[in-house]
Image (tube, rainbow, N blue to C red):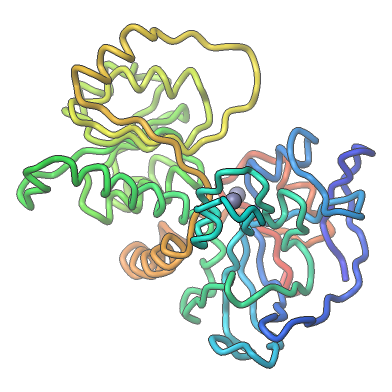
Length: 366
Ligand SMILES: [Zn+2]
Ligand SMILES: [Zn+2]
């Protein structure tokens, strides 16, 4: 069984041979992997900045964004049967009794940092033929989503963010009048940004995608397909953007670029929520005007939050919403997937930054 692996200590990236996994507990489910998405996290791991192999291994199998088909179930599995499509969750809880988040099944909010993540931290990922996982980490996907369900995991980032933004906005005593359209700016036009923009547009926000690609880029056309406006940072400063948008109620940051993120924070509106999802590379320090940031935070009642990973509620919301987006904007959803690669060529999409979402296809069709 082939697997796409990274050897951090040897600085090597290669296809390795793995033994087929076996069901060892009554709640185990054996999965045939169909597709695995590649993202910036994989690029960071393959650049040896990030990622930890499981105990006893000198390599880590990549892959955390996935779609699989159930092929075999343990004797106590009740929710799945062979042939079902599933998307597995990524993070596994820490074992500390005092971690309230993990004990509540919400390891996406883990306090200790001793969680494991498939394909990222101390547990092999999904970029291989067969995988065994506990049924409690699997989410059922309807068959009609087969062509696009590999996008579920990146969409969970936006879904968790939206759940939190909604909770934060409950503090505003007048609620959300149906005749007033809120305005959101999405920073970054990668897959997480575009899926976030789709989610915001779908929930009724007037949505603006702000990114460095020019307005003639295909990503701008893609944003238009689902009713979002595209503004290029190559031609419009954040002040010009704000003049076009009006009051910015929500910023969904999905670029991982510290300077651009803090520049945009300057134009967040009164009562606004700024949600960070991008993980910046360590690099040169950037300068921020801390005085203005604090001044606005206090005098404009603003909230800044960061969010990572996702719980079951966000996975279920992502599967439901991807179905709605796919019915509403089929071309836009399909065109997010721009490249398909066989496992033997997994290095290419990991390092090639062209395209939007590149995937490894494991069902033999590529
Ligand atoms: Zn990812
Ligand atoms: Zn924990």
